[in-house]
Each structure stands twice: as C-alpha cells, then as structure tokens.
Length: 178
Image 1 (cartoon, one colour):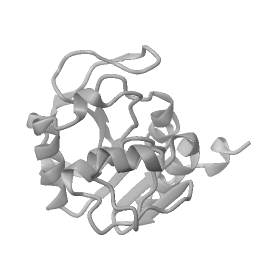
Image 2: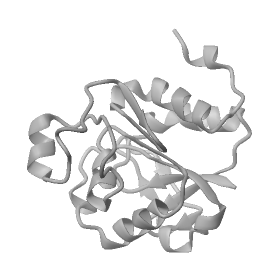
Image 3: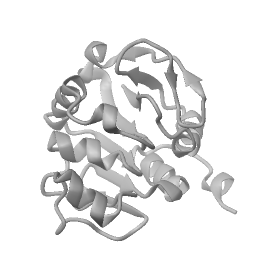
C-alpha cells in the first residue's frame, strides 16, 4: 500500500515539502502520479518525473493520496481524465489530502459533496468556480472531515502533520515546529 502524490503543471512544491519528509520519516512508500509521464514543472520551476500516469495507478494498492495546490489551474478545469481518476477514489475509503487550491479538484469531481472543507481560494473565487458548497466551508487552517484533509496553502506544515497522524505514521513532529 502506498500514498499517491499528484503532480500537474504548476503544482506548488513547498506545499509538499513537509509532507514528503513526514512520509519518508514514517517509512511510508509514496508514488508520484502524473497526468502523463512527461516531466512536470512546479510553480517554482522544480522538475519532477512521475512514476506512473493516472491511468496506470493500481487503485487497490493506493491507500491515500495528496493533491498540492496549483497557482493557475485553468489547464485542469474539466480535465476529464483527472476527474475520472478522482471519482474512482470516491468508491474506495482512503485518506485524501488537498491543500491550497487543490480542494477545487475535489469539488469538481464530487469528492467534497457533503464534506466540511477549507481552501486557499477566496469566497469570490469559490463562487465563480461554482462547484463549492458555501455552507460547508470552514475558515480554519486545516479541516478534517471523515477521510478528507483540506488546508490553506500557508499551513502546509499543519497539513502534513495532520496527514501523517491520519496515516498512523511515526515521525518526530518537533522537526517541523519553530
């Protein structure tokens, strides 16, 4: 069983930094999942090579997934392969983490339906996108509802710690505190 780390063009590298460290410290296997097998360039320019494409993922071996935010997700709006992949995860009970703007990917796929959440997107952006429930938005740094963990991008440390705890990983939380 492994944790999937979604990669798409312009993903936010820093939002994954502490999470990747906690997964490594907790000896949790992680796999980089791309929309294809091409090099993916993050918003700061870091180039990453996905291990698998979304259509190659063995969902039976996936027990958790994390989606970083992206500084411009126009290329992901209505991305049918990504939506279909995320909907497959809905059928399987697993931890799903989404930070910053990534809760939009969950909302466009139906994974946020009926769930409390937070996001780095403003109220105006959420209203414009038209897929978010205003009633379920919680103005908190990190929100956990059932199997979903959502967070604002600036709270990537708290997000990673909550994610590591949800997975039951052993890690030294003090490494990530000021």
